[in-house]
Amino acid sequence: MRNDVRELRVDKGLSQSDLGAVLNVSRQTVNAIETGRYSPSLPLAIAIARFFGHAVEEVFHVD
Image (tube, rainbow, N blue to C red; front, side, top):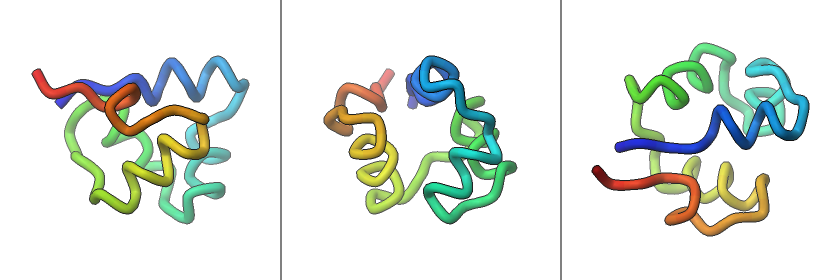
């Protein structure tokens, strides 16, 4: 699954640690999501999308 988390995070001027703190996950989790090594749970995917003001489908893309 492809995602736009890195682009959205950088556009907001946030570090991986900053985003992790907002979402209550580690920086390593944010990195793994951004690089596609980890697919977030549905609640986490929803939290990410809501934080950036998008629908889940706009942030995460099935390849």
